[in-house]
Length: 495
Ligand code: ADP
Ligand code: MG
Ligand code: ZN
Image (cartoon, rainbow, N blue to C red):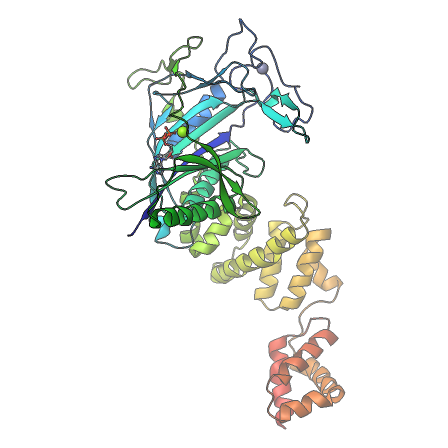
């Protein structure tokens, strides 16, 4: 029997607002002293009243507009009732049947596989709610402390339709969404810090188009890798259960990142009864009106303010700079890298060499400069090389005024200490030497000093030439032109 996996995601993202969702306490998740950003409203004292944070609503509208959702003219907040110590009111203000955004699509765009990138994932809804307090359990498990700094922080929830089929698709969706949220600057969406949290729902059935199978939900996945791994594990587990003629039980499972397995957390009691009802302390929210302008938001204005979306950026840089998809994906995920690159390109004025220069700049930027920044964990703000001096370095290389050895050394030097490549090569005598008469002397010396390599060469070991070139490069501190050297060695050894 063939079973097909079906996956749907529920993703929460902490919104980047100054204040909380329904009070004017600071929304600062980096606050280390517990219970600092609190007030009677977010502590749920009797008699207090919530007020809606406009910036939070606007953030969710931006997400909806970016993803092509339908924005409802009127939206409503509802109470979701349940008891838990991290929820002081005994209910969470959320949205039930009139969320801010309905529907929408996110095309998977971060795959290096172009076919996979065509897939469009349907979104069910995006709504706004408040986060809960944080519980801190003592190590002996005898007591629990509560920190209310997070209580009432605005939280966006996006729910997808059950339309994905592999762990990788779900991971690509989550990574794509993270980039959207960051591009819109509405959430830092960092999974490791819990600023973006992802729950996955998985079921298997013989024919998902006709009937979905029993779903299992996996919680506390705090990395993209965990999303993919947990789903792939769970698909296999459910397959094994079904192939043994047993039934999958509807339950919530956790992910053990060390053992890389899911484990049962709790069985679904009868469908949880949240007794949703409209929040009586908040008005129906008039978002906008199609004919008049008396809503709280002007959607056309919001659309105009939208930054370039990552998939648009991806197409643009593929087209403009001739990037392949893998390259474009590196650049759209690193805004500073792309900015640096685009400013470098602007410094190339000469049309004739522009294409070659762009290509060389891209390679040096991705492998050398980014490599250096990552390896030494320096930030882009700390590096002393400007796009202009980087462009100068690339041009010196293209014009063969310096060797690639010198270019790489000089890059490190300028990243750390600044300076202009044109001046530095003069000061340090690093200009590439291509003159045959000058290099011939060195070639002769190296031949004299390395009889063993010469013997190898004469026995037919062609690679010995590379060794000799290397010796000559070292002797000239990388300034000799290796192509000319190779030619000279060949000529000398022929005779
Ligand atoms: P619930 O009311 O149990 O939260 P929803 O219908 O709101 O269920 O769906 C929650 C998430 O679970 C959505 O992302 C949805 O796509 C997904 N989902 C629903 N049914 C299934 C299923 N049978 N298999 C896989 N995912 C599912
Ligand atoms: Mg749900
Ligand atoms: Zn407060």
